[in-house]
Image (tube, rainbow, N blue to C red; front, side):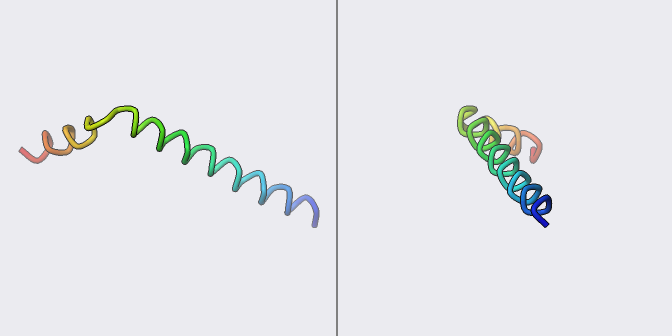
Length: 42
């Protein structure tokens, strides 16, 4: 049972880390994602 809890906590920690990395990457690009979307809509 302890192994399941360790796996759950490790999975949640990994997801939070990846989400934080993706958020930081997106915010550092500025308005580039919107530019890509508007470019595809033309």
